[in-house]
Length: 193
Image (cartoon, rainbow, N blue to C red; front, side):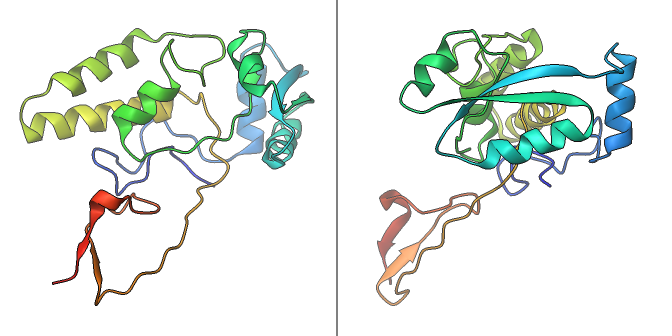
């Protein structure tokens, strides 16, 4: 089970500790009861008909008492996501491994992946602090603060981290890509020396 949308090897990402809750069905039931939902509730999730991962997410939610209904869409999934009619949408998206891009692209009110257009002033402030940092130490701390706070918000369930394999002849090509790059773009490649 992933504990973060942000791989630890990425700039500013840290192993989540503070505020992170391990997978614990009984604790989840207690949290729901504390929030006034001891008997659970019904949740209609917008899902893309092409991807079966939503079924697994639904099964996890059912274990804690949430009655999950799936509303399957395919050709109009983007329009449905942007409509604001869905409290929860299952969208298959990739993360870049860069906290600034991933948080801005998913957790701000201008993001397509934020169906309710929720805005969090702390997220916005941390994004600004990261963008305005002028030295490496301050920038690393700002990205770490952003990644840590974002992963504590539990906006997302990250059911899988997919890796793509690639092969190349190291006698011909040198690849200088960060460890978070799944498949290197051309600018990471150069002739082997």
